Image (cartoon, rainbow, N blue to C red; front, top):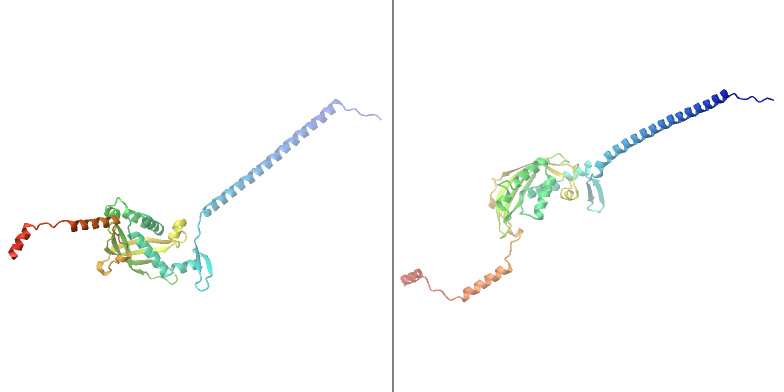
Amino acid sequence: MKLKRKSPSEKIDQKTRKAVDFELTVADMARRSEKRAWRVAGASLLMSFALGGGLFYVIPHMEKREPYLIMADATTGTASMARLNESGAFDRMTASKAVNQSNVSQYVIARESYEPGGWISDRDNRVMYTMSSEKVRNGYMAERSRGNPNSLYNKYGGQAAVRTKILSIVLADAQPGRPPPGAVVRFQRQLYDVATGAIRPLDNKIATMEFTYRPEIGLNEKDSVVNPLRFHVTKYRVDQDFSTSLGEFPVNEAAYPQQQPSASAAADAAVAAQEDAAAPARPPAPSQLESQQEQR
């Protein structure tokens, strides 16, 4: 049997076909790898957009504080917790007459009182900030500004304080189960002398206010302690009360601490009294001598 020898041309064709097949295989693998890379890149891009959207959705809720109300049964002592923005529990709380009178009284006292400084002044400012709308808050800041010549600071400085006494609170009519839209408050301002402890009536006024409750307002922990129900005053006006006189509601001085004389002042007074007792009697004045002679 004879073996057929391959001609050089056949060998060249065979090697050429192998080379072409190799190039086609490499090109096909490159195309497949490119398609796979584009698919991975597209999936990564979609995942990045999804994660970014989820992050923007979650961030606002991370700092959100939800107010809760813990109520205890007076008979059994069982405690129940409810969110204040739930219509049932929130409406029951804000419709209470005692709750509304407490918020109104706290607001009027904080706004109309004046303290030269200290913790009481800081708390009054915090009450005004957390319970007032922006318009009402700006009016209060302009009224108490040191640039205002009629402000209480420019009038009294650190020499006196203004105390507020609530005389009456009349809540506006409201629908059943709903909070009242406003209130009328009669109050008396009293001037307290820091140096002597003396107190006297200053004036009688009437405050007319409109308010609402906004549980969606976000407050920090300190502000939530001051205003847990998100009491929000939208309008506030004060007029002079001419229907009552200052003497109609006398000042209870026992309710305010009187400044006691210091030990050094008492000692000085005792020494002066002893010196007066030990001093020799002074001769009478000429006018006294003439009057005595006339009487004789």
